[in-house]
Amino acid sequence: MTVNERIGVLRKYLNLSQEGFGEKLGVKKSAISKLENGSNNPTDAMMKHICVVYHVNYLWLTEGLGPMLEEEDTDAMVE
Image 1 (cartoon, rainbow, N blue to C red):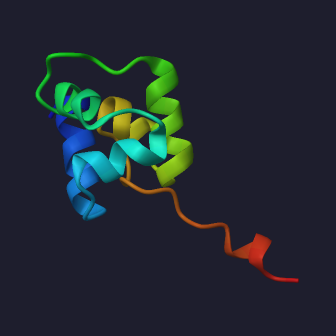
Image 2 (cartoon, rainbow, N blue to C red):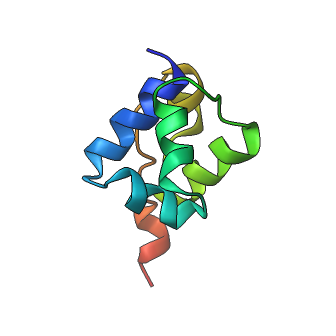
């Protein structure tokens, strides 16, 4: 699976439209469409932004390794 395909998998997993997914990233629906269909490849900055905004494991997004989502740090939630 390519990084472009993983972006589509992530978006669908989050149950977001291309428009909704792109809105949180500051890009238009057409940009997400081009990423998902392989017309454009995401920049490293875009991949990092996706990871921050959607709590995605960078290694999963870039290489397909590990879990899709970062695990929440439950220790940080304890006061």
